[in-house]
Length: 126
Image (cartoon, rainbow, N blue to C red; front, side):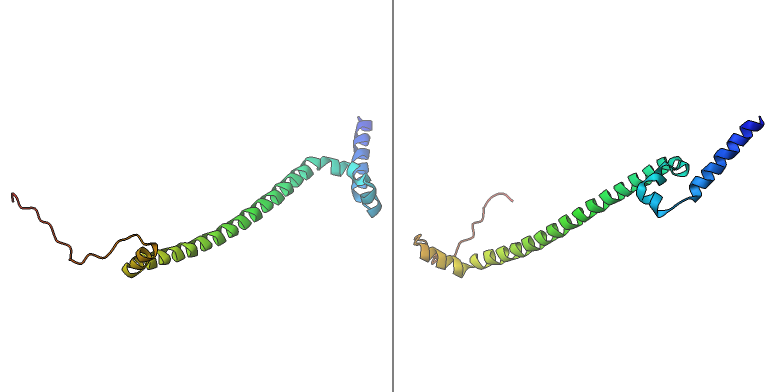
């Protein structure tokens, strides 16, 4: 039983030694990834990497939507101004004086009535 305690004690001491020994050389060589402390935290590191990827993807998606929204807003402003222009042209063309000019220009053969219109009423039961 005593030997078992010693083995566990050595493993813990060795683990603490591996955790304490951190050099730039071990970082660049990749041997830091094989240390016991890092191996234990591997699922947590994978979780953090997955969250980072989701965050980056979400950011790109939000930027794409913002660009699309800006483009659509500009298009709506353009269409609104086009609608106002078209409505004013229609109002200008539909004036009686402009209608007479267009009829005369196209030689349709229409003329203004010389007698005013009559109001028709129905005589009958009340």
